[in-house]
Length: 173
Image (cartoon, rainbow, N blue to C red; front, side, top):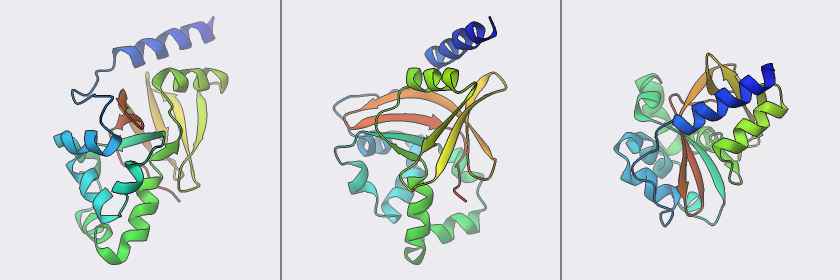
């Protein structure tokens, strides 16, 4: 019975989550990010890390995209330092920690959580692991350091994958 309640609540949560207005299957992940004001810091970081071309590739990719407010939680000096050319590799490692190969929709995440008793490990493009977990009535990503970021919006479909919007930047170890 507990499992049934979990599945129903997870599906309801994911289906009730609002979608980004920029959803357009003819646009790639980068095109969508550029068209959404709340991704301006992400777009700046993608350009600084020289990852725009990669995320315009065929994919498919699943991107857990932090909003501007998530980046704002990072110390301003640290963020500015990461955006400098000499720190491009470190920034790229952080950003590719937000990307998983393949197209993982909200329903896929819910299924994986159900099979994993509320946890689902995802291997990121930088080789690290981020874990989807159920917590406080929502679904969150837990990074390698034990920090959480709520998945706020799901299933923004792109021509080369899917974007899920998260509230915080997740960090590799």
